[in-house]
Image 1 (tube, helix red, strand yellow):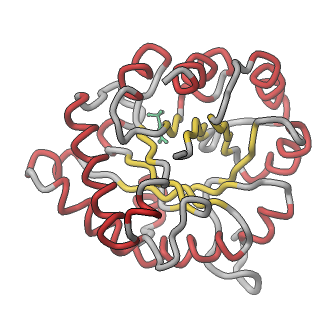
Image 2 (cartoon, rainbow, N blue to C red):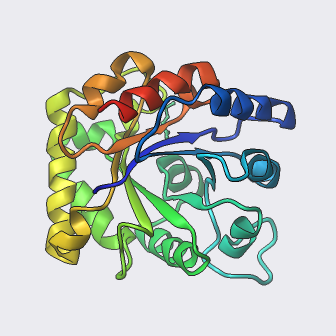
Length: 250
Ligand code: PGA
């Protein structure tokens, strides 16, 4: 059975006091069945968050990792360091990393390989800008990003893919059902071509960009949407829980 994942991305938000949200989330989690839940916190909170959630159904993730394992890279954090905190996921290639830090597809592939080597599941992101959407070249753009950002060796266990149209992130503008389904179907077909049906059929494809409790059920109704990567609505357990419930019920 294909993985289902509700992943939160706290981005550069959260102090130690905010970890109480994880307690609330844990306390009020619905019956998950096979649905997985992960919260990707800032690096400063990884160890405390992983310790607080322990063996519970809430996994902890980071938001980036270095491509190198260790060495003279001031300020960077390696995948083995992340794994050492108790975290099990890492977001790679978020559009904010691509834009703010000039990360290329090749950088992302190197980071994904480093994440796998440390035993982390990589949530690898792709998505088009508004200009690309309006130019009608979204699928070409996604194909290029996938080709460049996914190393050989993708499995359903080591990789989750998040489709996040940049114009939908933090804006409240959500693509239509048809637009989401079109890109997700396309991603599944691309994975099938490159890695074969056995791998492609089991990889979780997340949608991200202004997901809320009020639109989650509709988004999860698409056949190839297996979860969500949620920014703003993951900061408060009360906002995230309805999204988790919608996924568990989908
Ligand atoms: P948003 O962010 O849910 O706040 O739109 C999603 C993301 O960037 O992962």
